[in-house]
Length: 465
Figure 1: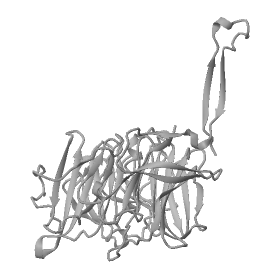
Figure 2 (figure 1 turned 90 degrees about the horizontal axis):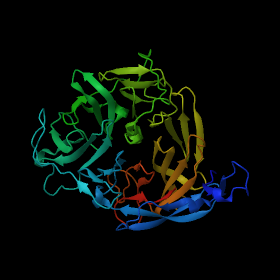
Figure 3 (figure 1 turned 45 degrees about the vertical axis):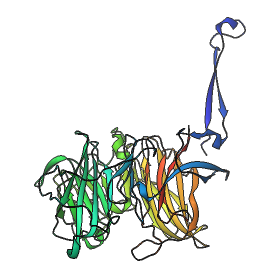
Figure 4 (figure 1 turned 45 degrees about the horizontal axis):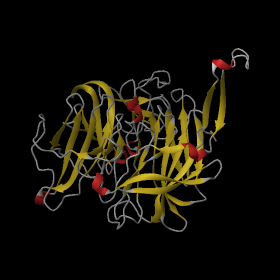
């Protein structure tokens, strides 16, 4: 275990010269600080709802109680989930429900964007976002792009009276203009279900147009299993259908250098990770990578012309991220174990660490991960079904992953006293895991226990200094 060390400089007055030899005026002594004593409250302003969660030092098995701020579905969630993200400016972002909700100050004050006057052009159509009596059914996705824009969408199911049409609303924060915009896209095919969203790094030059980036949105229901594709946009407002390539594969089209460990990537790569179910990560040199896409194990690559290519790179998993240090992280779940793979040389070689949860979990329910290269931090969130029945929400912290991939701490999030199942028709639902990392290292994470009928999310308040 990396022990917290406090360096104390003892400065000896020059007036005592003669008692000490020359060059001995400054003495540095390393004093060991007990592990939990190195944690302090990062936010001195109290929250409306603060709760105590138990955290374990995995090297010594010592436990302590740490403070977390807790928020319910009224802060951007819905009956069954939160879709959480963060920005490099320190915003907490959530669009578990209809509209983007955010906080600039770790959850003390909140804002939301509800479409009003239609400012966008193109194929955008004026339409009422919700249907009377159907409020609360919307759900979306959100992520910050590498130019500071925030791209998001919301899907409103079965709006439109007897027609029961799905409605797709693009919601864009334009960083250069410091304003939100929206567009109702009248698409010709059903969208159906929660979206996953990801940035295609630009600059984009395509038959659809050009832009700093492109945005891909896919439906949870129609996602890659059916190769039904999704929607794509070069302005974050006007979206058009696209198809995934077939999975048979063949001879790779291109070769790419994925080694960015000496490239000084911007902090955006620590926050622009999509939800793991997008099964893709933005490529710093431009484009988007879908690891382990083809049946032969090769990756799919969408280039900056928005064309598909086969990439002869074998990733250990389809769930991967590249962070601002240029490190590639992939996670594999097999039964009740997780293996975290890490590459510092562009997927040429891999280190790994395995989390075996067999002693505590009878089944893994939901999970998610994220890395932050600036902070040298990796976190793994696991919701598992315990042997006694209830689901338990947990969080592993790996601080200093570049030196040691083993986790420092293991935290129980919430009471772990509620059994819930994802999917429509279930009485108690927690549909997917979701988390993010703030610039100060604090984690935001979704969970569900008996204290609320809907899923909650928590913001970490105690951090090591």
